[in-house]
Amino acid sequence: MRPSLLLTASILLLAVFCAQSLMAMSDQQYLQAMAGMHMHDAPVASPAAMHKPARPVHGTEVVYATVNGKPVHAYLSEPANSKGPLPGIIVIHEWWGLNDNIRSMADQLAAEGYAALAVDLYAGHVATTPEAAQALMKGVLADTSAAADNLRQAYAYLHDTEHAARIGVIGWCFGGGWSLQTALMLPDKIDATVMYYGRPVDDVAALSKLKMPLMGFFGEQDKGITVQDVQAFQKALRAAQVDAEIHEYPHAGHAFANPSGENYRPAAATDAWKRTLAFFARYLKGA
Image 1 (cartoon, one colour):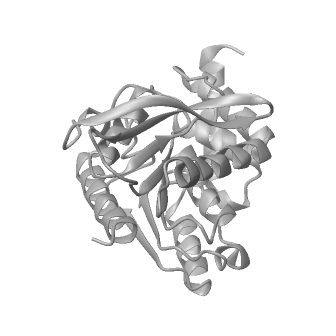
Image 2 (tube, rainbow, N blue to C red):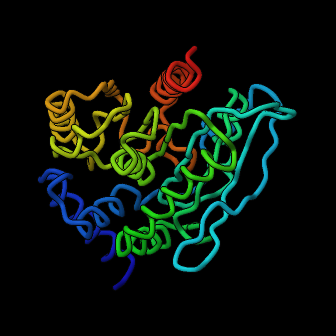
């Protein structure tokens, strides 16, 4: 298919998918909607990834899991010269993969006093184009049990190896959805969940298992995760009696706070990050 025809087809697909609830979509439809939202995007560093850590940190590559018989590498960042166990945070990348922009966010979290483990759901691959990101995300959706196993082992690494007494999880976009899924997989173990415009869930029975507080950020101009999707998510969270705080920003669209990409909106992203740090400080450090 010629590029112009492919672009037209993507626009039409996005328009069709936006007419229905994201939560009612199949995985394939969700993948196509994501492709539509990022069709003009690129994994350039956004201002979110350009902030320097508030204090010196030490980052290193670690093997934290074995999935399908292969070792999985992550980026672990901690405050420099830290002594004693720290609260841990599982950091889940956008659909671009574990790139330097995600490592920067792990460094920023580490500077706040955490052991930040930036995981890899793409088996060492990183996308530089929307087409490559779509293919990598498709691979994860084709084997979600492997991704779930990956994230369970990420928790175990922070708990057993880093001896973190409290552990949170955060993700953006594709990673935001997996942040919620990690909480649903480990409802009695995760202590705080932050999701940035990830795929929501409106299954009250599933959400009722959550024991930890949850904070979510969404953009009212998001063409994929619509205001109606967010409202349905909020309604389900209330019915499930989850301690949840959801923020919607009126002048922001999808990926407005992504470490990678060209959809950054400074006012919304800055406010969301300030709230994120305060949320983790409260529930992971008792501040």
